[in-house]
Image (cartoon, rainbow, N blue to C red; front, side, top):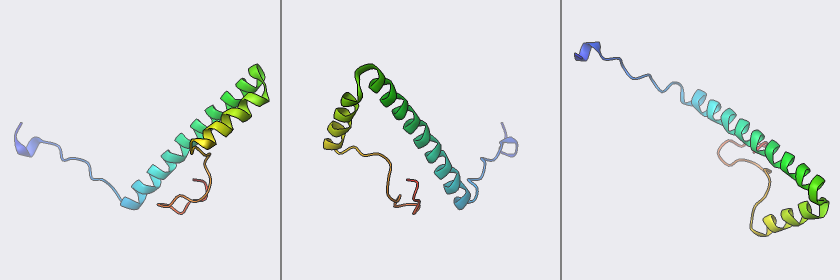
Length: 80
């Protein structure tokens, strides 16, 4: 293919628009994961009791895991 026939690569777009799109995608993924975690907690509580869910949460907190809270440092977003 001759150089004049090659297609130009798409421009990356406005950086602010790309950042906004990535931020929205991040929130969509976080919401989906949070929904899955909540559904799993309900299922475990139904099958094995609330005590197991509390014990799992305590164990995960002890390992340093925490649910989404605070402010995302890159975006200053309170949802993150």
